[in-house]
Image 1 (cartoon, rainbow, N blue to C red):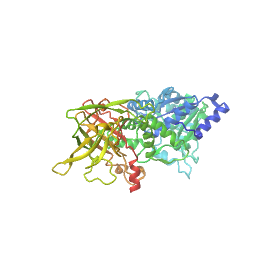
Image 2 (image 1 turned 120 degrees about the horizontal axis):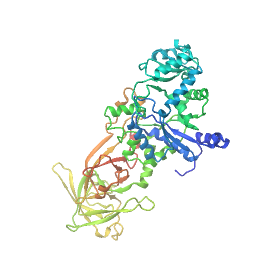
Image 3 (image 1 turned 90 degrees about the horizontal axis):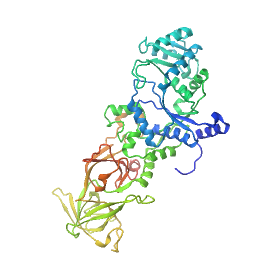
Image 4 (image 1 turned 180 degrees about the vertical axis):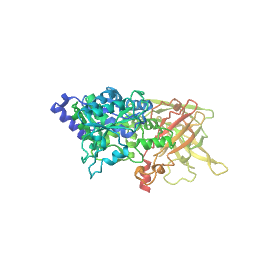
Length: 556
């Protein structure tokens, strides 16, 4: 986006740091996803922010996989995350993993034990939780808190060697059981987990907790600005405490409001439920808010980057309208999508005075909104055409500017036709519309002098190809399904997918480019789906031409 805007608060901090010479004016950010699911639109905001800050201030961004929980992580998720970041248009400086630092983190933990700042606790999770107290009452020490450094070092070594089962012991930081911040009340640093790790295999059976791994990984990489979401504000004192006690590079954490989008859910746990319980076809289902789902739906990288730019960087949580995301999409697709014709609910139009057996090739622009027109394509035309059923009315009202007895209309890129007759089947449904055409009214060289108010799209019957069309809509019927009573899945929109099996399309669409946006004239924006084969084309509706939901909200 080209318009000028004021600096957000993180940019102000960075510019102050650069002016003061902090970190020698260096800017190094990181994007640290856990590879336990596919990225969603909320992660896109974080990606755009972290990579965007580095780009703006001639810095770099590391991609670091926070792979400290082997039970939920998989290389499938690692691969999908890489693909999503590349697709959004960003390149990372170094690809790193928290598991790269397991030896270093273990040494850090030993250092804190040696300083009397960490201890091995045999208490159960329930006992530890109870001993932490409440926000208004201080915690109480568990019996193991007074162990000597020597004993703790020995027990921690035995934990690493696999001498204890899962849950038998944990390593805790020894900080302040009376702290008003519950995260400072002797938080867990390590737990035992005998599970195969996607990178380190079975080398480790103890794994660092997020609060211990995160800040130390930032410090090892010398991250200058560690940007995360608001829920990590209470974690910041612990982040700083570990760095201070270990006397390592002082990375700094800064928090911004996460992206909350209406008519969807943003929790990985809930998205996983939708996948596992077959409410959607997978993580890349076009109704999902995942980046892979949005990509398959037909969203463009630029539309998502512009959306993240528009919503800005704030310190307060709010819910963003899904319609804004679609607005950014339409804004981009209007300039980039190629125009094509498809008839979803067909009836036949017969031009009775068109020469028998004749067909001709007409010319159509790919995109009249593009600065250079974006080229053109050939459109075959003949005496028999498919048109939309809604474009004919037997008894048309006064302001109906399409076809009906005695009414004239322009066929897109072709001729003006006038209806003089129609046919019905035994059920009273119109099956054929009979028209005459004006040979001198050809688009681009019209000398007929006839003026009409309406233009409709069409596909030549003899040249038409067929495709399956999938009309996608919002997955949920309510704005905030997570806040409603009962199971969030009760609010799934039953009309979120409608399949039309045999739609007539102009033949040029048999060469549709994967990932390319197409505007089916008067019908919406579409893209070729990954299920497509040469024998069976499948197109997804990316978005309607206008915000249909705004009308529904106003009507209700």
